[in-house]
Image (tube, rainbow, N blue to C red; front, side, top):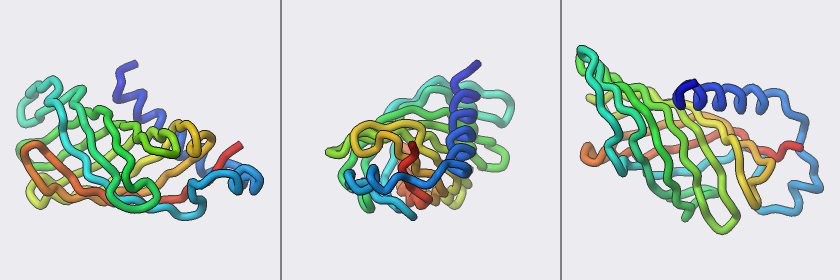
Length: 172
């Protein structure tokens, strides 16, 4: 199974699990600093390596492109991350579809966030979804899933400013 399919399945599995998990244990939630309820964080994400580019008519398909960045606001402010993504740009419509994952690292541990984004390459606006799949430290047994809004702020390297908002809780 290729990496894109695995990422989509992981994202949907995490979203499905999030919809049906039991309420978090108050004893667990009281012992750690990660928030519960609705969590928001802003970050900047940029292309760090170009990946492998293939053209299929008007479709530019990029595999294994590196990404990196940092959270600039919210409960993950100061955390940095690296990861990779695949994306397709339809050069006729200037629409893009991105699927990727990154792991953020900071003083509370790590959290891995797969994401899916649709973007308009003319306006630079994008939107999508994310759901955490694993974590360590404060983010062990932690689930954060929600929506992304993004805006391209630099075309080369492609850099987005992103806001992520969604439900967050501890699972058992």
